[in-house]
Image 1 (cartoon, rainbow, N blue to C red):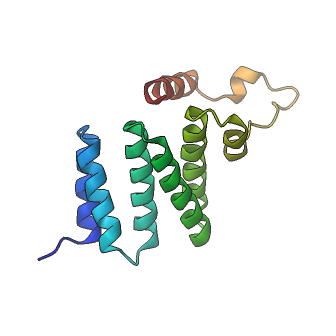
Image 2 (image 1 turned 180 degrees about the horizontal axis):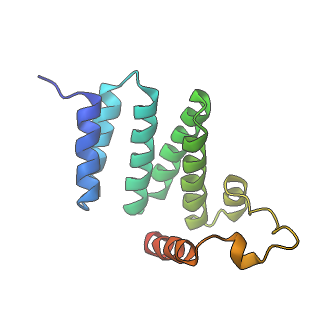
Image 3 (image 1 turned 90 degrees about the vertical axis):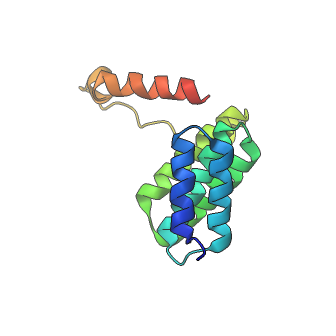
Length: 139
């Protein structure tokens, strides 16, 4: 019996979580070849492929899959997925030194409203620090 797209994708995810990104990519690519009618699943696979290629420092491939993910998220009206894909795309463009394009994907936040301290508008300090720490590991 052949493995389904979802089964292949889940194995790819497991392998990537274990740090074996090359093997994970092979399973994600196989999942894309098998195909699925579930567009949310396909979007997740594109996102995972983009992230795996990013970790492998194959930024052109990462960019390709993050673009696919963004297009698909927009097509199905998945606003959360669109935001995620835009962030992934922006991070990849940043690593490639394409800052003008990255800013379009991830525009700066609006100015802090008058009367609100900047520190309080950023949310819990741990969140900002943990995000920066995670980005330093990726970039």
